[in-house]
Length: 300
Image (cartoon, rainbow, N blue to C red; front, side, top):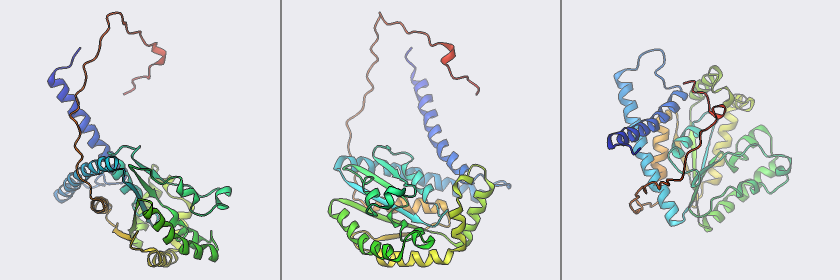
């Protein structure tokens, strides 16, 4: 039975609301449910502004995605920062409305025994984009300049070799046609402490907090020194660093997405009008009943 126009409008509206609810669910997961006290008018106004801007920027990201596919552009975006700096939340908002075959995330685990014997950059190379792709690295080869240096997972010779190699490696990527964009998410000592406490007391987030994260608290100044050296020695014209002020998660996401959009000369790609074809019906086809034992119980 063909649905009426009113029914189609209702279904489309329901689908749009479901899409908005997805962002609301993510906000609740981030702990922005209003807390114990009822939200003030200022809180509500700020949330409305955030959602309005986020959806607008995500619409621009879709246009960027179309342009990347159309032109065959290749993009690598690195997200670095202290633990709980908000890198993952920003990445989620960037990828939320995009095609995962075009914009994908690379979040590599610690290297295994075999990978430790390889050229340091080797395991990252297989994740680099082909034409028409965007790859977001949730942490990257800069692990060597940060956690590996501070925690003693590399020696002085490996550390210095990294700094000798990484500018040439990134220049080589750029010469091959890959645009490299590097973001450092900056948060304060107090803000990280607050976010760690939130993870400790939230059963849904405890998995995010590792012993290595806790160790980083006692080595705050060591990480600061490592970051300063990293920025000084790897901030090159071909692949500069950009600092995202991330104490406020929402503002950090909006600012990062806005800045990312400014890094490419994308334009809206025209597409031919899409027309849904009529269903073809055959008189000799009879739909077979599905055994009840195969149906998922409708608990809700």
